[in-house]
Image 1 (cartoon, protein in one colour):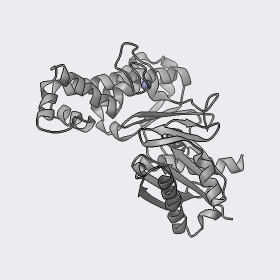
Image 2: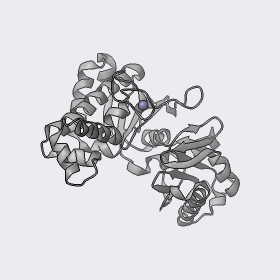
Image 3: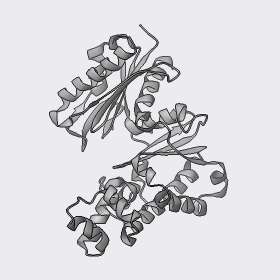
Image 4: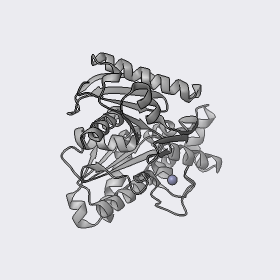
Length: 321
Ligand SMILES: [Zn+2]
C-alpha cells in the first residue's frame, strides 16, 4: 500500500488518468483516446489501462493505490454511483462505473461529476486556492458548473446540484439541450452559439455567417468566433448576447452564494474581451454591492487536468474523512 491516489477522467474524446499524493503532486499521468463508439466495455478497459500506465510512471501498481476517483460526464446518479447515456457516452444505461473499476482493481473507487471534480481541483490547487466559498464554471461545448461551500463540493439532496449551465435566464429564450428555454448553456456554450448562428442563417438574417456556410464550412462556435473577429456584426452580436447572459448568471451566483471567487474555465473563455467584457459590465451593474465587492472573478489555472486532479483529491478525502 502506498500513500498515492489515482484518478481517471472520462471525457468524450480522451481518457486521462493520473496518480497523485495528498498534496496534489502528480507522480504519473497518461492520456488515451476514449473511442466511445466502441461501447462501454471497451471504454472501461481503456480507463483501467490508462490508470495502469499512469501508476507505472509513479512506480506503483494500480492495485496498490489507496483509492481511485472517477470523473465522468453526462447524467450521473451519484447516490447509486451510476453513469447514464450522454452525447459523449452512447449506449450507457445506468453503468455502476466506480464499482466496476473498484472491483477490477480491488481498490475503493468513487464517482464524481467531471465539473464538480474540476471545481474541487481549482479550489485546492488552482485559481481558487485559499478560498472556502467558490463557484466554478466551465464554458466549452456545454456549460458545466460546481459549487464549493465551506471547502467541499455541494451535492444537494440527491447529488444533482451545481448544474449552473442550466440556470434559466430568459423563459422566452432559445431552447436548451435540457429542454428548458433560455438557459445559460443555450446562450453561452459553443453548441448554443453555433445553433443560434445557424438559426440566423436559416432566417436569412446573417449574410456574413451565411457566407461561411456557402464556402463549405460547418458553422461551429470557432467559425462564428472567426467571423466575429473579422468584424461581422451578426457574429459579434451573438457573443455580446452570450456575454450579457453570462453576466446575468454571474450576478445571480454572486447574490445567492456570496462566493470569494468565481473561477471560469473551458475553451470558450479564451474568446476574451468579446465575451467576458460584456459579462463583467453586467455583473458590475446588476450584482448586489456587498457580495460584489468581495468576489474575485478569475480564469481557471489547471486546464484540462482539473477534473482528474479534483477526482484524486476526492479519492484522498474519502479515505481520510
Ligand atoms: Zn438547459
